[in-house]
Image (tube, rainbow, N blue to C red):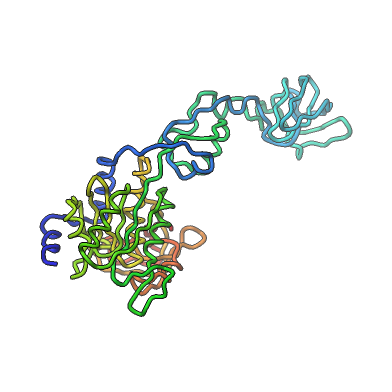
Length: 408
């Protein structure tokens, strides 16, 4: 224990939260290997980072289209009574041309007939047989989506480096792209440590805990765009920990849960040091999650996450998620900070940035703390839907004050 503590105090800096996060982003950008790529179908492309830009294969729309159900007319004929000469539905074209005093009934999305330069909504007309009357004034272009107004053939519609969501998938489909070249999901090894940790399916004794951390991290990794690989948990033994870490370093990123404090049986840092690890930090001025370790060994990055469940979850969201996103090919990995108004007064001791379970109301603005019993309280975390962020330089927040919030 003395060697581990001395190593921490003399060789590894302690950072405030913004500094520590900046170190993670800077180091991974500087030393990450170029992610491998693969082709993915439209559904599998969602949540991935696009490697090659996607261009439109034709003008969108290729013809002027109606934005409303109504009548295609000439603006010069309005207001007035017009003769109905036909109908055009979406997916079809009117064969003729709208001439003076004429109107064509048209549906939303249909191609605007030649000669027409305005759409009059059906609600603003009176129809009697083949006559349509409206008191709407002429307004050329009204409710018409011009040809190529959305994009032209050859325009980039999804840039390379985009972290794709359902809208980008729609854009690919619009361009006729059934596949896209994307960066491969990074494989993230997850290793839980501790004599007390048992598999989820096992009934624990009173002094044991089920391995909830590994499964929580696996879900978080998948949400971040990685491919989780849960390794067998390892007991509090330095040699066994070293061997398990070696297995984990065969992946793109290693997440260790537990064993990173200064206790007698915390072997993660000594085991990493024995493998030639470079430590960038092993303590951050935050709560929960203060004994957080980040470094690189054998050309792979690793995080040593504190073993208490809320500490594990919070530190992944604050640091690990960004690492996975960058390793997945993203250029940026912003922290999703919002602002909320406190329901009740809140005090904390300055010096640490605190990330506490909170409930963001349905209005997306009002926020209140969720009562919890400490870092092991998963039940309280399940009742929360956000983290309240209490700054390290402010002691008191009054009811109604604005405070930063990270939605979950």
